[in-house]
Image (tube, rainbow, N blue to C red):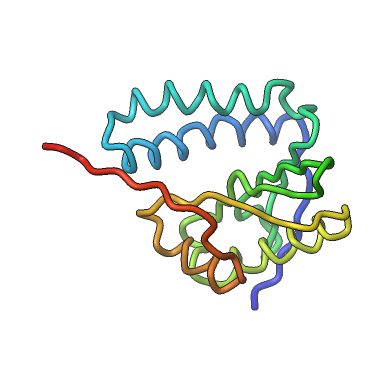
Length: 155
C-alpha cells in the first residue's frame, strides 16, 4: 500500500484548500442535482463558508494535507463532535493522477488512526451516488450505509 502522512494546513494552505473545495463541491452538486455549475457554486460556497465560519480556526474542524512521495497529493477535511465522540469526513481529495494507487486508502487509514487517538468512536461520511470509486473505497474500509437519499428527475 502507498504511504502517506497527514499534516494540518497553515493559513495560506487553508485558503487555497477553501477555494479549490468550493469548485470541487460545486461540480459534484451540479452533477448530482442536475443544476448549473453557477447555482451549485453559489449554494455550495455558502454552505462551506457557514461550516468553516472561523476559517482555519473553526472549532472542531481539521483540514490536513495528504503528503506522499515527497509531495502534496491531496487533502482531508474532518469534523469531530466531542460530545458524542463521533466524527465526519467532509471531504477527501486525492490528485487525479494519483487516484487508484492506494493513496486514498492510506489517507483514510491515517485519518482513522488520528481520530482514534482523539477518542472518537465513530466515523461518518456522505458520498455522492455518481462517485462509484469512492463508494467502493469506503465499503472496502468497512463503512456501511446508514441512510439513502433518493430523487426522481423529470424531463
